[in-house]
Image (cartoon, rainbow, N blue to C red; front, side, top):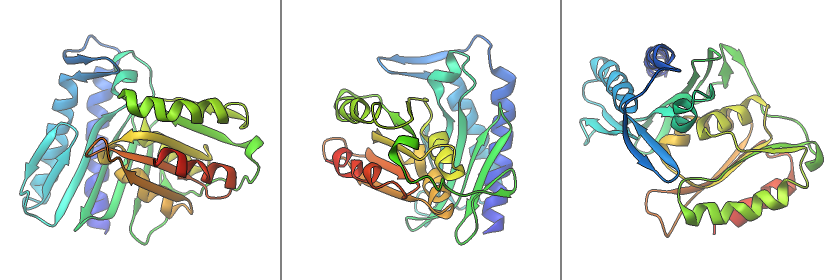
Amino acid sequence: MSLYLDAAVAAARAAGGLLREHFGRTLDVNEFHAHDIKLALDVETQELITRLLLEQFPDHAIFGEEGIGGNQDSPFQWIVDPIDGTVNYFYSIPHFCTSIAVRRDGKILAGVIYDPMRDELFATAQGEPATMNGQPMAVSQRTKLGDAMMSIGLSKVTEAINTNLPVLEDMIHRVRKARMMGSAALDCAYVASGRLDAYVEAGISIWDVAAGMLLVENAGGKVVMTPRKDKPGKFAIIASSGHIPEIEEKAAVIAK
């Protein structure tokens, strides 16, 4: 596992250096959407990650937000989100990350989430503890809903937004604070580190949360992922500490 984890760490740090270099500058935009932006830098960053990973594992597959690469028949697949939080990045909000995970035959073996602006690297591998900058971390031990910090993602599509708005309306009155932070991967990392008690969203892609899922589970938390019947390739997710029953009940709401 250390071979895969080391490769993911090196690629994530290289990507982070590129993102720091361009942060706050004028950026080339490939596409504007109603609730999303596609940057040329997204593509450039994934190409960098792809090159580094395939240099070491030439027979592996790449599956990323910006496309595929490598040997797509391989049982090993690297799942890459080069900039998770692209809209934040475009608006010079320093809350974004690079997420890299590797899975074999559908099972995640290792995952890394790197926040280059805070220089925080969240990493884990199958059977290993979740860490931040090399130090073990664990989910929150809070048990009262009124003490909880929760992030609720509103996604990019109307159907998912409409699913999560009632959850936000309900929880914002019951938890300590509800946040919409703009990076699914960092939300997962924050649940794993105990900063958040839960993260829920009704419409995410696997590259948003592949590394984060393993981080949460290896930090002692719980992840429920449900495919959306109306949006192939999209999932509803609740990642949580597992210690607050009222939050767990929301899994049934967003999974519909």
